[in-house]
Image (cartoon, rainbow, N blue to C red; front, side, top):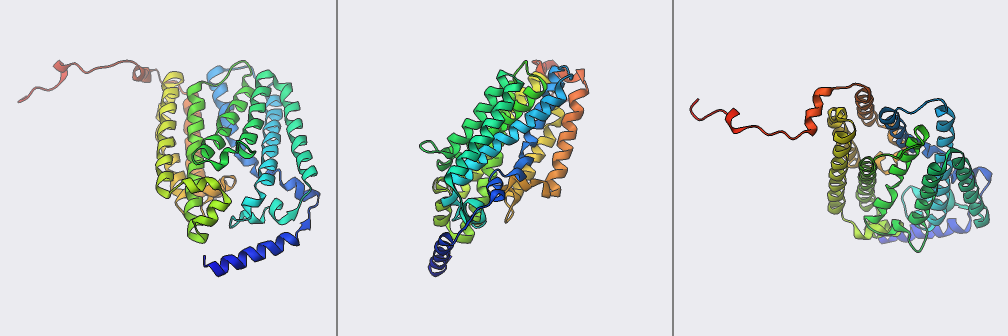
Length: 342
């Protein structure tokens, strides 16, 4: 962007800051981002896998699931509130986020922090009804938001650490789903690590899309004003990091598949296709990868996701004993190989 345009833009932003309107109740509620509730789709695999692998009693499952989802939404909303409030000065430099409530309206810090405390307290209060393990994971969910957004840690300002710390929400959500269905156990470590690194792949793809689009639109300097971590990124390093995250996720997922339900190995090609589809989307201009809450608008992604989920559901309940040999050592004797000349 030419310097004259930048100066004009900054002058306009300054004038807007001086004339911002006072926020109303619905504006404060918008900080909770209830439209982002679609992200809690990552809770559902925890429910399915806990049922398929543990076969728990379903007597109290319906109320536990309802309360569990309300807890997840409440704590996520608390994290969103603190995120938008503390990011308001940085979001002012983003091409679209400068329209957010905390940037465009005048908010009361007291009311913002009171709203954060109310959502957090409500979520933890309900979480306590679902047992100590569920409450502990809920507290970790809340702390992850503080680590990501609040100084002196504020991990979102550090290259690569921002992706790793943001994507920890994925295994947390999976664990909440698992505990809703089976409060007597925790998910396998291999599954949690696969989910974590898979989430890092999604967040890395988001960073890649933002880097490509915003750098082309307003330049790298403005991009780093929006998010300091971008100063340590390049398009190449982001692509490589996505590859590494995907490979790590595939490794941990392979360990889980072989160890806990070998039938899932037949669903792996669909999972690989889902990774590929999302990376392809992140390469498109103005990609939905920048706004994961809108991923349901991509017909191709939703079709790939539906096929993948369908395959996982099918192989959760279809037993194929012949696949057990995949986890056994097997070597082909030399005598069975065809000899030269025959």
